[in-house]
Image (cartoon, rainbow, N blue to C red):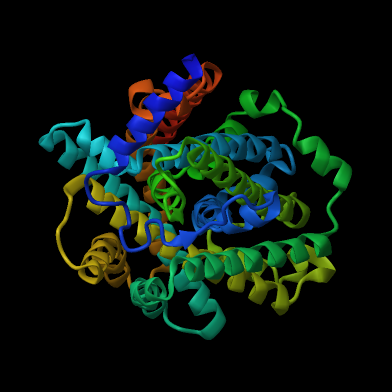
Length: 459
């Protein structure tokens, strides 16, 4: 009897939650059919795709300098931090996907519904700043990649990248599966480029495996602690939590049936975890590459151009140095930047629709979203035209914005997914709720420390 009552309450809740209001990413919401009563692998294939769009946020150009620098400075020790960051990402993204599937709304929509108008506008401004901060690394990374590959002036490369919203407009007309396939292909390019370069660098595999074990040096060494905080703080991106809660709704299943909802949660989570595992492998490869090639060389690797030049300098990386390695690095950088800008533009649309319920044609909305996010980057690049070091310094500033915005995404996510009235039987279990609150508090503390350190208030 109790199980029947629970099923009835859950079904009633799902009817209420999906029956009103504008759908998140309305033009692709429920647009991908999934088979009924199919086997495990066929069902998984149907649900595979959104995880790739999520994963690119965890391996975007903003992570590269930190990960490679971690290996160059401390060899393989910080691999344990990469592992921990990836596990946290899996936890949060699984919660984000479940929120969207069960409620039929994304994180931005729910946050707006549970706050007043003024608070909603403030939260939108903060979240929009996070999108701008995310775009900084992606646009600068792509612009530099175009400069390295084709010799374009950096400002031209940045403008080309800023215009890729036009590409997204075309892709959305072709269907969401096409976007998923393109992003997955770009992720594969990144993976294979760095796997190839790591194989050439011949790392000590015993030391690599040992690097995944926890080490007290991470806490006791101030320099190592700061870089560890940078890796963790730069890994969990606020916009990915909004994105995950929306694109988890792109599959067409029976939202009024409890078993269909449970299946959607299960397979979306599996897809997310598989793709985030690939992101973990990429971030590990970046750190391993930094350790194998640059540890003990005292090389200046603070900029993408420095990394590009170092890979072709035999005095730094030895006999394997070649222009091909440098070109592959630039190609992976371009793939990372382009895939990240596609997902960043989608996240921008989700945030604008959810927080301020903007009523305008989708093409105009997406163009406006893109203009808001890229204008500061383009203005800064124009002002410092010819001074690439200054332009790349924007990356540091972008991490501060992301650190500020992170709690405003994580706290509502944990609150909503732990709310039985909102989530029914799919609310967080006790251990998930307490673990997620612990992770949230720790990440907030780490990010506050990073902000204070960046502005020089703590050392």
